[in-house]
Image (spheres, rainbow, N blue to C red):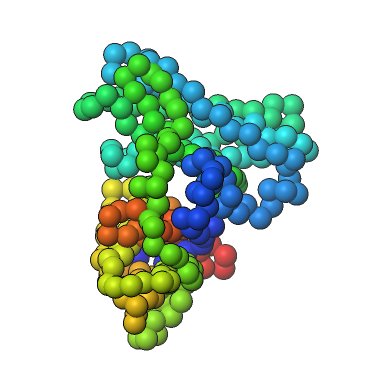
Length: 261
């Protein structure tokens, strides 16, 4: 895109959010829909699955919103990282029908199980709910639980962590991730990943006691490698254990200005 703009649609999740919580509970803490409280009393989401045919699983996502006084459009997004595929379904919830369900079919080509990221967004693109589910050839669907929780998050001590638009030394607009590590005793590797449907880039940085801050910029001007849509920006240590994770919506700035003029 010639001119891109970004908006954080879910707060920047830090590794500490997982302390003493399930994956689903931790992810619920970084939902940031700004108008949710004024429009609803509560949002409830659930999932189920069944074996539709041999090797094909039907995944179902249900969203129910309490306290509606007028229609509320929401979107269910099913992201399959191992398939490089994203599927979306919209539905309108109403005061007399405050719940809705979407379904999608997925084939298990290799292995006995796989996983899917499921998210629910409001009509402004903000995330209301997010979960990671596993599914298997028997049609069983369960929330993902790390087998070894201590191996899921990095033991490195995390300090400053910010994600947002900035201007680099050349005067270009960039999406900047700033990550500070504390109490380093030697050099350590930090990986920063940029992921959207079908596109993945991983950058390697080296932090050290004398240089404990990692800064990673994604150019938002004259960058032909950008696609509109949701991007997941995550940072891990050298062993791929989580430090931070954020989700931004990328859009064409020129198109946005044209639509508003």
